[in-house]
Image 1 (cartoon, rainbow, N blue to C red):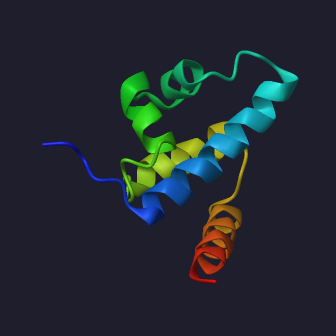
Image 2 (tube, rainbow, N blue to C red; image 1 turned 90 degrees about the horizontal axis):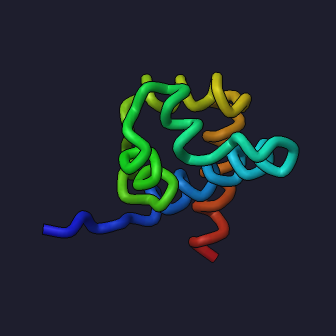
Length: 89
């Protein structure tokens, strides 16, 4: 059975991808594979997070991503809330 994407997951994934791509602009090593390896998860699993298939990943995964991709949990939360507000309009 295919996993259904939800708006929360799509926005979360988009925000995480944005952080990674910003780093990739400066250094090409910042691929999905590289980030997945840095936090100890499978590349396919990480790709699904970026594509919005996991609206509620484990907090430890988000914490690890925040360390590797250099963002704060508060910053990510604010970014997600702003995007959700845009969707309501």
